[in-house]
Amino acid sequence: MRDELQPVIAALKRGDKRRAQALLRPLLKTPTADTLYYASQVCKPAVAEDYLLAALEHDPQHRKAQARLARLRREAAQAVPEFITSAPMGDVLPPPDLLVAQKPLPAVPLGLTEADLPPLKSVRRGRPRSGLTQLGCGAALLL
Image (cartoon, rainbow, N blue to C red):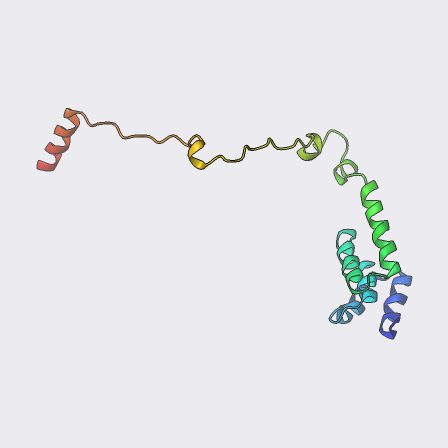
């Protein structure tokens, strides 16, 4: 482990995430698996997963990153959706995609062309002008 990470580790042990973030910023210019792992500890879980995946790209055998990623994914699978915990029941409706079961899309027969499909919008055709309309337009031109 590099000596530059010692202050970051100390800040994390004290619970000072802001200080750890400030110390990590310059280290992330040349990221290593360890710096990315410690960066995952000072951010939100959604972003932490990205940092952990990047750490595993640098070192696929990084055990701490593997364990933390597994723990984050396990916690995300068990988490209660936020809309349930953030408001009293009945005040907020859940997102529609949670209420409606996902149905598979109907199969589209192959071999259909655009000509086989009905038009999306009907085309209005102009009305034929009556004799009185033509006479009125002609008279307006003469005046």
